Length: 616
Ligand SMILES: Nc1nc2c(ncn2[C@@H]2O[C@H](COP(=O)(O)OP(=O)(O)OP(=O)(O)O)[C@@H](O)[C@H]2O)c(=O)[nH]1
Ligand SMILES: [Mg+2]
Image (tube, rainbow, N blue to C red; front, side, top):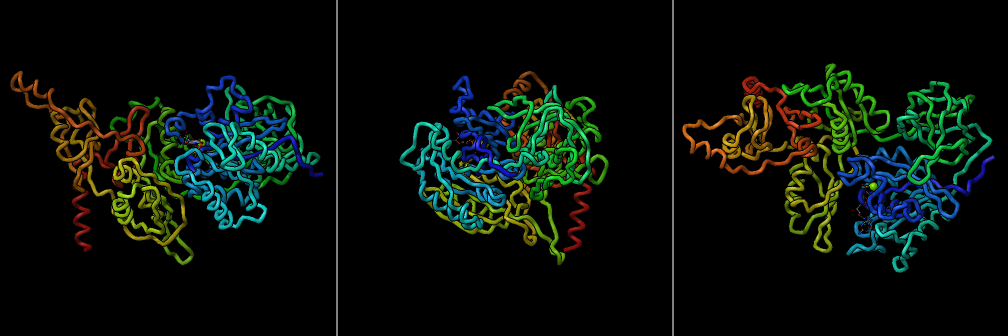
């Protein structure tokens, strides 16, 4: 018999990037007395991994739990960046309701739409939280209207569109039922969660069934699976069956059982349906596996996520410096292959396929950031490898028409920069669909082929002095829009192996912008800067000035170089041309030509130019 558990609530926090999810969870944890040291609040305590802290965004969805007036509230914090939308799709099956956070200035944004669509499709009860109402230009009433329109637009049921609303300043742990009755605490939010989110519907007499939704690892207890116990009871030591999405049945035993309690996993002996639990004891667990009583035959429906749109080739490092900086023995194709396929076990929106040769793998994801985070994670683990320029994943429709991904792009810039943005996106086959201005800021909405957006961010930030905001989200697949010009500049390529000198760099910098300073070891074919003209030129950066007397060598030291452009991972990926690769090691990022030999490459270039000439 099915009953409702009143002692538990399972909720997810969903929103567009930066609307304040993780900060609000801090407040909830703090006010339910999790922190012994209250000073730890306000530091996005759930954003635990280094990359999350460095980039200031959530990358992985995470579980936590608090207790409020005797009711346990399991909370799943999710990332808001569109590239990590797969994380949201992965975890929503664990909850009965969601807090939809909306920035009181920005209103619903592209990813608000995406996450709300997913939540509504699962029939979740939604509480709208209009957050950051302390911000200048906050417009809570308008934002509420826009949110209501969004519900209707997404086909929400009458019950779903009749959502409760909370207004909050998540940062200060304050909330209220109206913008004018904000309390000094989050009690109104806790009350609404208890009143409006239904407790889990469970059947404790049915056999135990759980869908593995998250994978974790414990140094002592091994692989850990996390999911919501749908029905039945699970006990420590119990025999179970693991049913893979393909229907394979593997017997096993639950060794340890845990429940979430504040920021920790707490060991328990027994769990009842409705709770979010974790367990160890099963080998080779996968996301979407069903863990069940041994006699269960039907698996729970597997998690589905949307398809990737962008891909890169990862390959064994073939640079002359290969083997110098990575962990010894980790640079082989076997190691690289194993690491990449292992990633797909939990990174559900990522795809890996063997490439054209045994040393190459095609890695597909939801965007450049999705792939960049994987690259950065791997280099920090000690891997070295090379990656190609990202490219979009094309499709064909039934009639054989070539389709490409198109993105909806939202841009916010100061009014006087609109012209620049319009020009930049026009060149990339962008179509403006909306423009309006308020408080000296213009908001533009565009449809742009994803192809045109690869490498766009750096241009955009340069053009707007870093003051512009830009978000994009997949709009859909449409017929191929035709050629889009590349970066329009060439590369300055090192002429031979050596150590860069100030003297030589001083000559090289007349041509464009350098990526390296003096004293850097370079190899032939390594890209050391950007040429302002659209051709590559080989430059000798290791040449020392011919010294004839003491005074001249003194002069060499006095050369003042423009500081090199800090490339970093994101900028390097955006810079790559088709005939270039990025060498990634734990210590360095080096852009290089695919063909390192300058003479060979020039010959090939001339041959291609000739061929192109014949065709015209
Ligand atoms: N003014 C104001 N700023 C806030 C408030 N809450 C959060 N912020 C700021 O908003 C920024 C983003 O906060 P996060 O909590 O990381 O946002 P998020 O939704 O978790 O972001 P992602 O997980 O990356 O999608 C941070 O700089 C916060 O300090 C608020 O109530 N008022
Ligand atoms: Mg966050």
